[in-house]
Length: 125
Length: 108
Image 1 (cartoon, rainbow over the protein chains, first blue to last red):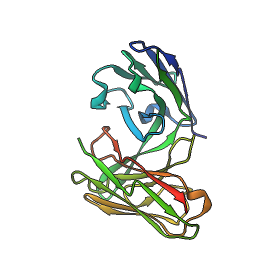
Image 2 (cartoon, rainbow over the protein chains, first blue to last red; image 1 turned 45 degrees about the horizontal axis):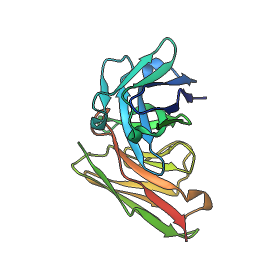
Image 3 (cartoon, chains in turn green, orange; image 1 turned 90 degrees about the horizontal axis):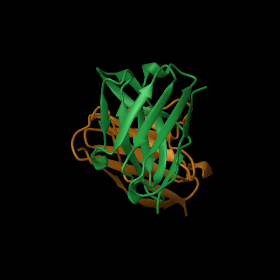
Image 4 (cartoon, rainbow over the protein chains, first blue to last red; image 1 turned 180 degrees about the vertical axis):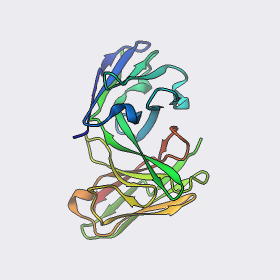
């Protein structure tokens, strides 16, 4: 059974840092690209960052402006999100999600087929 | 960046109704469009990938269609468990994904 379990959320003051972790099990973690997606209270989903299976390529949402760093450790089946210079607007539930890639009609199609339960990050003084 | 616009933002319907949610991309995304369902306090659940392919385990009353810039999610006969928020997502921009703002489907 595929499982993704996030941890590391909590209350942090503006300007502070936090490191989120996502422990993966039930699949070959090193074969999949992974993502972080967040959801502010009462708001919609916002894609945050993606990392390819071997960490070769990394992408971030423009809104993060270099404050967040995604990484992974395939030996530990774990995904991470280092968040620095946190702001009140970063308050959200942070989900990790597996990126499934399927081939059809001449091209690949990606989708987020498994998600963790989320971890809440609250930025407040 | 590719922008995704969903309509309507909210929708009231009854059990047994047929409902349609639309999603428009700011540029052509071919068929790189997914639909998710999210219930309060839960993680999103993938319903449709590649515009029209049904994810394993998802009931056949969910149907996706469209290509290019215009897409629809249709629920053929609403069930009580379908009342939730629905999001579209483009994955045309490799590993730089964007979601629509969501459609809240409520019981009338």
